[in-house]
Image 1 (cartoon, one colour):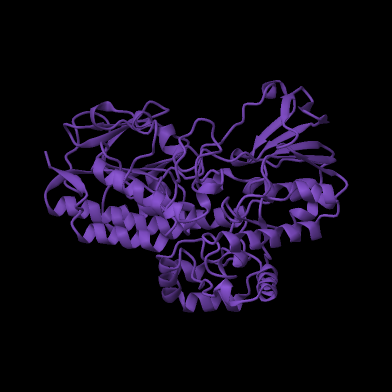
Image 2: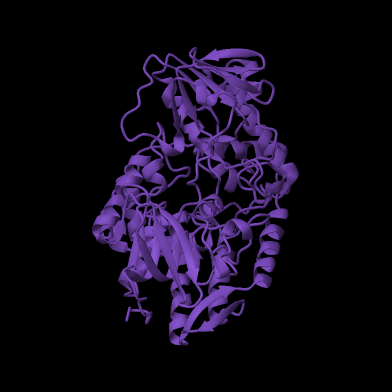
Length: 544
């Protein structure tokens, strides 16, 4: 008998209380909490060779957390962990984040229960035995009563299918699948497709050593100055001393402990608002977005005023007016993922950087040694694809679990990513997603979000065990209501007006659906309310 009371099936497949897929922030915390705090038998699987998830794969030049992160883009549950880890900068590098995650794995001895270099290729629900059976790419099988999918909101790389790209003879690198050995651009002609977060971070670094960089821009970005700096020891010590209060603030302030502006734009003159924008720009980080005036993502007039302020900064920074014009975003400010940059716009003042605006000069084809656009041909030796991901839903569809009656998720999600609370799916009992469609995900601090979602998973498991129940799943009515709620929140903002990966618009043929809950604090209150009300939007089965 396992810790949760599940009886192992007959056969050679090992049986666990829970299987966790993924060893990033979400998966590691789920493993720790279910194993160490609840006493369950847990097995983790990850296709990578070690812990880290996104931060194990994304090693491209300039990779950093896209937020003023330290020490808040980190776990919050352990004061001891907070006290012993030293973050060197305000905006953490990929290397620093990965070192931190590795430290966490060492501290809590997590690796012993994770099988690395192993992709889960199949997951099926057994109606009769009320458990999940997974199969790996090595042909192994394992069963568990609960399946925790912590497989990453940003994991499935978006690989563009341009004519002739397979004929290109040079090296091709995707920022989300960067080699672990050093990549040299010394003396190389480099083409970069994409100017989202990874492109904005990588381009200035690549340009420092490359012979020439041709940036193939699909959409201009509102990049804000990171103002990254060493994190003063006295600040870190103060954060440690105030950690309980800061953690509470993070829970109720959208994942960060800092208060947002309550200033009303209408109470200030145009000149006063411009002074405020200047102050926030100089402070850097996300201050322009969250600390200028309230309603930035709702008030169209205010949003456009800030957008024009940023466009003015681009004009000031970029020497060539024609290049500056190409870099001007026209969609509402902040409705694509806001990026913190470290010298991105300044890079276009370098003699070895050329900007090609694909909106007016689209790619026609690749040759063995160049990329050809409508208005010209650009010789390149190396191609960098900063083309992003099939975000949020892509990882679950790649796993494609089979629920009741063997129904594959690809069939259920063919037209909409129906689920309840961003964590459960009707027809897929005892399966839980961390950072799934409809959860706050990237609109919240993801480590803390994973902690809070895992706490709710615990409440589900305890509810089942205390009531002698074997399985639970959301109802389709609950899914429809949740979908309406997510879209209702999004439609009160300017976000849906922009084609972005938030809406699935970056992937051809992907259903158009807003993929995140924009009110993180409200979302986690809702999880608590659902548990305290006895999970009324779920159906249950007696344990067999």
